[in-house]
Length: 176
Image (cartoon, rainbow, N blue to C red; front, side, top):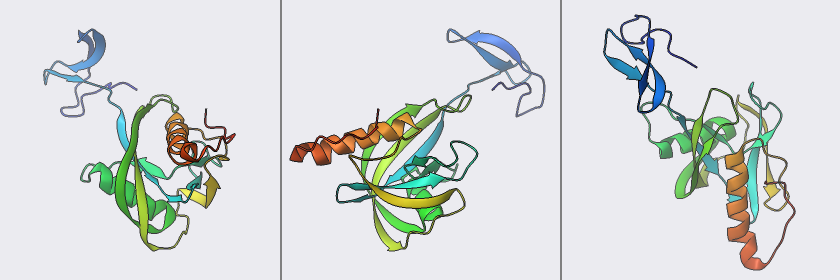
């Protein structure tokens, strides 16, 4: 993705080396444009040694299971985003309890993401998939389906080590 026109003044951009990289630059505004990753938050819901996953109903990885997550809005904290995504995708009101992991995702070309994963606890509502998902269910941590996002696989691996490893359970999940 490139900025062909300056989003502030509408003038065409040029390319200029800044910080050792070619970047789009607006001569009129004297402003470089950086292609930064987008922040996303995930709501990790556990029930014992099982994790709640949702089946995606979006254009990206439709039909695949993933941890409920979405992009942060400009007026919310990353924790508020995790709670909103649980509400929108699952119909659940949640309380954010702990940060599990933060990682980078590059699975969708041209859309780099920084994913922040929080363990959350349901405080109300019932599981009813929203528009972005068409199913939700709990999976044993040692038997999750093939997840399309490396960050999701990493979090499952962290949880397996934390929760199952302490009990000596070896599991054969495809968490790569």
